[in-house]
Amino acid sequence: MEKMLLKVTENVKIAKNIYRMRLAGEGKAKPGQFVNIMLGGLFLRRPISVCDAAEGEFTIIYKVVGRGTELLATYPTGKVLDVLTGLGNGYDINLDIMRPLLVGGGVGSPPLYLLAKRLFELGKTPRVVLGFNTASEIILENEFRDLGLEVNITTIDGSRGTRGFVTDAIGCLSGVEGAKEGFAGAVEGAEGTGDFDYVFACGPEAMLRAVYDATQVDGQFSFEERMGCGFGACMGCSCKTRYGYKRICTEGPVLKRGEIIW
Amino acid sequence: MVDTSVTLSGLRLDNPVIPASGAFGFGAEFAKLYDLNILGALAFKGTTVEPRFGNPTPRIAEAPMGMINSVGLQNPGLEAVINEELPKLSEVFHKPLVANISGFSAEEYAACAKALGKLPQVGIIEVNISCPNVHGGGMSFGVDSKLAATVTREVKAVTTKPVYIKLSPNVTDITEIATACEEAGADGLSLINTLSAMRIDLKTRKPVLANTFGGLSGPAIFPVALRMVYQVYEAVSIPIIGMGGVSSAEDVIEMMLAGASAVQIGAANLRNPFACADIIRELPRAMEKYGINRLEDIIGGAHR
Image (cartoon, rainbow over all chains, first blue to last red; front, top):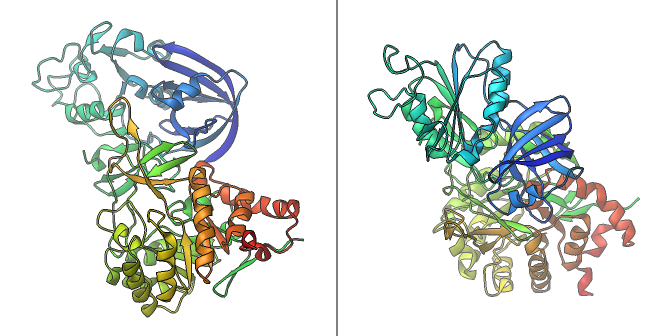
């Protein structure tokens, strides 16, 4: 963890209630890690996942859901923010895998972007499934495509892409009706593992659970919880795992499939 | 050169700044950020005989100028604290420890006090009779002067270390509990613990915290804490560790003027992980600004 003062270089609306903020500063972040931002007039910082980290820049994408993010959305270019960086464990990418599948739900999608870049650097080409409520909330579709990746979009109301949930596009629900636009060979002949050998997921807990249930391969799932400090001191965000109690902010937010207790 | 040192029951502290129990874990997260040995002392995470997971999440809610928590005394249990957490802490911290203990019976408090009191690095036993977060636990001891006195006696009987009783503000008259603890043999008092509080989510129309109620801390409660320290200072003659929303060197001075011999910093550490280090760095400057040479001289100064 580092405490940094970062200058807002961009804060723009990119979809319904969703904003992209760029912050100038040393962009050290592993995929799946988050930053914790102090907001004027509010006591608790707000944890936001890192979407991209490059030389001298962080990018975060956030949805306005309450007072904190409402305030964040008003911040102009040039404003300096007090930010704790490098929080959380992040995704473990040093794995013997060939074809990872990235599954994002809504504003759970951003951390998968940095993850996709890092996987790509390791010579692995991930497949991407992003799920949204409706077309007006779609984010990052083009950015993932610009990395040269195949992206499947789902919307619950069917206004774009596959109608339904991310699991409908994953298409590995063996024997389950509704695998409308699955990957080639996803269901048959792969003993239920589909056209991928590993899953990285981030999104609402109900989506994580559905992806967990719908896939048989190993994977990593990024969770969300209300936090006090974000760096392991307050025990506000604890959860039970198969290997004891863990703090979502420190031993998480990414949990391995084998340790999750729903 | 100003003198920031203070004495608590014969224990000399380089300065009065002590991270409060529950806001500092066992120090590991902060040891990565700064040298913990700048602290006056360190109060570690409230310890119970058995390991506890605590309450369901969400456990944290925002409040105006503060926060509400319902962690529920999550801790690895007495054995793991002694065998794992404190040895790790001893590698990076060589000042006195305030061993904060909780229990669900007088016997459990005594068991924790006996075991932790034997450790040379423990300077003070701090007895949490007040945590409002735990069902059937702290509340009953902290709001009844007879029960508070019983716990005080049980703990005093099993340790030679100074025993400080940490008082709950969620009572009609805090001086009544304070006096009962003093009469039962307490060496000192810590106050205040968090104030019972809640928030409701307007979208779901349900309480934010899974536990419905939690404890309010942060700058919001500082004036309340100050008032209670002031009242208790007049009612007892044992030393007081003041806490509740202390966030700056000025707050430390104000709390000591009210009657505190030392000060604990809680919620401020969670918002600013360098809070204690910042306060300790600023303290001499603030003392000079207000014409204070020896910090100990101002304890209870507002009463004179």
